[in-house]
Image (cartoon, rainbow, N blue to C red):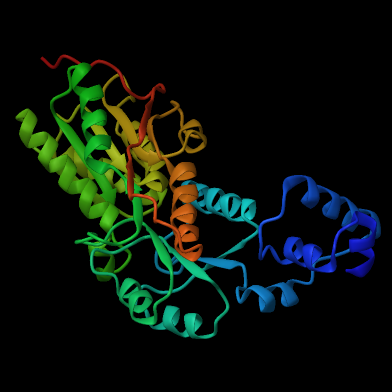
Length: 336
C-alpha cells in the first residue's frame, strides 16, 4: 500500500480510503490511485476490507429453488440484481432456502451477508418474520398480504391483467380463460404473485361483464397439454387463454394443436409475466406481457443498499408487465 501511495502521490490513509471504500475521495485522486494499483499489480484484500468496513460486501438473494422452479424469466431478476450490486462493489449470491424461515435464520446468524433480497414471497412469509426479528436489512421482490411499511418492489398485477384483457377484448374475445400454476405444495397456495394475478383476473372480468374462467396446471409442458384438454372439454366455446405459467405455455399450444385447435385462428394465447426469449421459443411466437424483472431486480438491490447506507429508503414500486405483440393473438373467430 505504501508503494501505491508513493506512485500516486498521496498518503497511505487516502489509499486505504479507496481500497476499503470507507471515505469519499475526489474522482481525480481515485483515478490516480487505481492507476497506480493497476501498474503495481496491487490486489484488494477482501478480508481486510471487510474488517475495516465491518461489512462482508455480500448480498444474498433468497429463492426457494427446491420448492419453486427457477426459470429463465426469474433469472432476469437475479442477473439484474447482481449487476446493480456489482456497480456498488457488492457481490450477490443466490441462496436456495426454504420458505419456513428456519434455514434463513441459521444463515443470517453466521454473519455471511450484509443484507437479503427475498423472492417468491408468500402472503404470510416466515422469512420476513425471521428478517425482522434478527434486524437484518432486506428488500422483497413481491409482497405479503399486508406490506404496509415493508421494503418491497413488485409487478402491478392489476394493471398487467387489465392490459392483457384490453388487448383480447379489442380483438372481440369474450370467452377468456386464465391458466395459472398449480402450487408445488399447499404452502404455495399463498404465493403472492399467483393469488394477486388470479384476483386481478376475477376483478377485471367482473368489471367487464365477463365470466372468469380459471384453471391450474403443473409448471411443465405436460401440465399445459393437460390443461388445454380440460379447457376444451369443459369450456369448448373459449376463444382466448391468458396463461401465467411460462413453462406450461408451450404445452398449451401443443395440446390445442393435438385437438385440432389452431393458435391463433381458433384460440388466441397470451402469456403473462414472461420474457421475449421464452415467447420466441413457441410456434407461433407468443404474444406476451413481458416481465419487468430487469427493472425490479435492480430496484430491489437499490432499496436494500439504501438501508445499508443509512439513507432514506426509496419508495416502494409497482411496475406492470408490457404488452409485446407476437403471432398468437388474433380476432375472435365468429362461431356459428
